[in-house]
Amino acid sequence: MKQILTILILLLAVQMLFAQEKALVKKGNDLYQQQKFKEAEAAYRKSVQKKDQNLPANFNLGDALYKQKKFTDAGEQFNKIAATNSNKKVVADAYHNLGNSLLENKKLEESIEAYKKSLLNNPNDDRTRYNLAYAQERLKQQQQQNKNNKNQDNKNNQNQNNQNKQNQDKKDQKNQDKQNQNNQDKNQQNGQQPNQVSKEDAERMLDASNNDEKATQEKLKNKKLKGTKLNISKDW
Image (cartoon, rainbow, N blue to C red; front, side, top):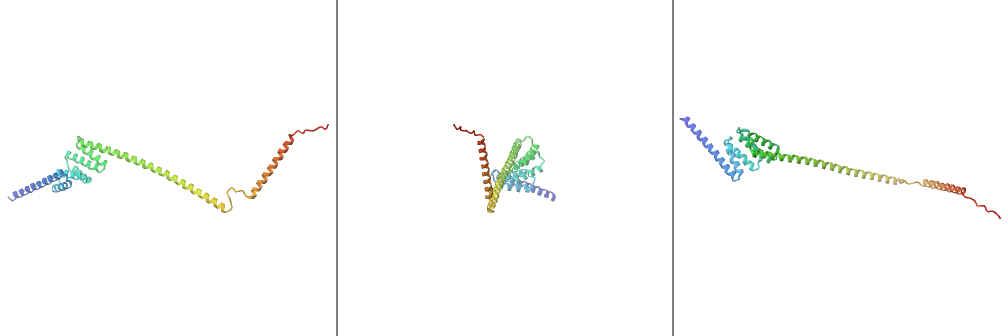
């Protein structure tokens, strides 16, 4: 009699627990429909705490997290469902939602892998196939943008290097001009002028020029005398 009473108590406890779980899930669903996602999350969490294998509650908990833009937490929830369930349809849906969470977090490569796993478990899901194509296109655009940015950075660096070289050349030329000016000023201070002829050299150059002029005149005179015909007058 005591054993029967114990069994009845246990059955009653299970029924009460099941009823509580069902009530919490229903409460969570109602709140979810009202877009009160934070309150729905709390109800679902209470439900899964009582029975961790409550699949609808676990799925709905992930959805509630997703609606609150808690994409990392939602992804972890869906990943846990996929890892602990043997039903291919359930696993496919979990990976599909995991892919969505990763995509929202801009983890494109990881989202692509999640969508592929979803299609392995449910190849006929057009939603997942579309999301996979979308994620792949986004990744392609991102890679192209990264390539363009890298090329632009290289171009900017080259232009900067050229500008730096031009500035350095100007600086070097300015320093050289300054050095030349300093040398010229130093020579002037020492009584020397660039390309200046001394007084003695100038006199020697003048004497040489005069001598050359005299020699030239003598040559011209002699040449004229040689070529002149003398007219001899006859005395009648």
